[in-house]
Image (cartoon, rainbow, N blue to C red):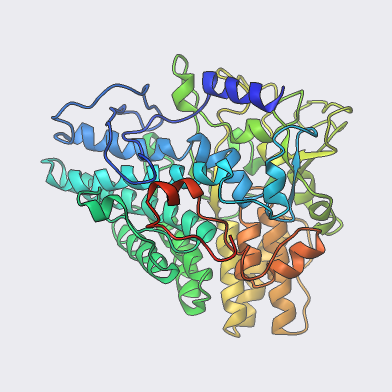
Amino acid sequence: MSLSNQMNAMENKTSKIKRLSWLLAGTLTLGVSYSCSDSFLDVPPEGQAVNTQFFQTQAQALSAVNSIYGNLREWNNIAFAYLAVSTITSDDADKGSVPGDAEFMNLYDNFTVTPTEGQLNGYWVGQYQGINLVNQVLDNVPGITMDEGLKARLLAEAKFLRAYHYFNLVRTFGGVPIMRRVPVTPEELNPTRNTREEVYAFIEQDLTEAAAVLPTAYGAADVGRATKGAALGMLAKVNLYQAQWADVLSLTEQVMGLGYSLTPDFYQIFRLQGENNRESIFEIQAQTLPGNCGASNSQWAEVQSVRGQFGWGFFTPSADLEAAFEPGDKRKDATILYRGETTPEGDVINATAPSERYNQKAYVPSSVTQVCGYGKDQNIRILRYAEVLLMHAEAANELGQTAKAESSLNLVRQRAGLAPVTFTTKEDMRLKIWHERRVELALENGERFYDLVRQRRAEQVLRAHGKNFTAGKNEVLPIPQNQITLSGGTLTQNPGY
């Protein structure tokens, strides 16, 4: 199927989540509002205007927060735009599909993307949609007469999700406009960029406040909502990106005390039955609901799965990633799906598939009942306990606490079937931890490119991989030209673009 046909099909049967409000012309306006369901996973069709009495009841408060979660599955937030900016930019993935289809993806692969490329604008809009939904909750829910404990929790969930969106934005674009509330004044409707440091401080404040309120776990009906562990773990990650090692160590040790543990079988983490398991800290939930396919599912798996058999075949594992796994590493077979192989569930992968390798973490067995199309029930794993252990190891190593670093790193390696790490110096250990992050998290949550940038070795690694990476420019992507134009020049471009 060509890209144009795929995009038409996507519009007809997409998993795009319907949202409470639109981003209008690059600014965060209220625009037209839309209603949403009381169900955590279900959001009804667009175009149903909220009446003037919305944000009056507890049920409406819950619905509004649910819509923020629903927006996480929106096309721009988990499919082409997300994978373009976070995954194909790394050395872990190639464009995939077939020559001639979605050639614009090569612009991201080669770091020749310009500010007018559409995926940039899509990613920007998708993240700010989420932020606008959060701000509607934070502006309106405090005034509702309702259970005060639930109110506090919903506001904390909203702050966690706003922090998540801003973390995505600051890593991709650098400093971006901070929106603390729904825009009211002309200046708020057309804001200037905040600095990178200001954005990180804002994220830390949201996560700290969220962690103080959120529960450590939920009942079955609310599994998948943000928890204390999710807020602390995300805060640790935010500090990791700023090399605030003492904070990373403290925060990861707090998460390590909350009862998470590694799932013994790495492969099973990424099957449907492995969703929200004891290793899971935060996942984007995807559940198809008969009769409401367009609003309840995700295309993350579909766009990456075997072309001509399951999905569209984009974002395929690179030969460099394949070679990165040590002999005997169980994660290799759980990460890379080869054409011609037979999966543990009995699917025979087409021997004539266009690409040699596909993302096995996105694989959903054909035996699974798929009401709304391939892979629509596949959750997206955002933060796992294994990553917390690797962050703990990295922080401990930087602080000279070698025994802690070895212990956490070796827990991850042991699960992969590998021997304990051997190293000679702190610098050697640092490289071992960075390598472990790559093979543990490969093709899972878009971490590799951002890791290379924060490790200050993106130019070295990516140019060796044949990419056109330019230091001082390509650490961030260009601000979408559409947003600059619509702002009348209030938004400024990143250097070099």
